Image 1 (cartoon, rainbow, N blue to C red):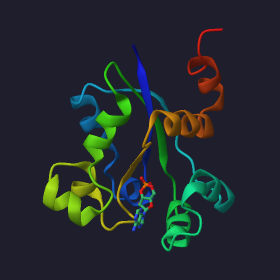
Image 2 (image 1 turned 180 degrees about the vertical axis):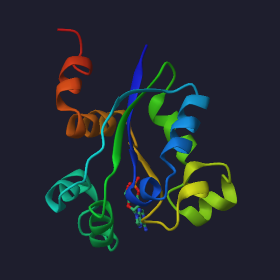
Image 3 (image 1 turned 60 degrees about the vertical axis):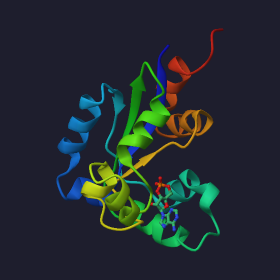
Image 4 (image 1 turned 180 degrees about the horizontal axis):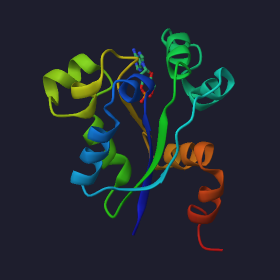
Length: 148
Ligand code: CMP
């Protein structure tokens, strides 16, 4: 069966020209990009997307970073487990940990700190559905709704 996850290429990774290298890593892992867009989030949108982190000490930084420039949201498809495979590719949230434990991961290679950590990946199938719907509501309606 097809499985899906939501990926974000974050502002600095895109601004620093790492988009193509990230797409190459996706292709190498046999993951397909089935939807893509380039958008600049408003503060309201960033707060809504990251609502689960509201109140944490890094929240304000996260929101200002994620609204600082264009990002690329992607819907990724795998015939295995898209959520797990993409999280494996991006590596640990902490860039420092990523460099130690997964030096070939996207965050190790293209992240600069824990906020500007190059990429996001949904943390579960449920989050993936919510996050795909956030960026690609029409596609989600057609493709994620169980058989009717
Ligand atoms: P992301 O997968 O986009 O989800 C939430 C983001 O918050 C995370 O990646 C990090 O970029 C950012 N963040 C910044 N500081 C922290 C922290 N201490 N713990 C977790 N996430 C953090």
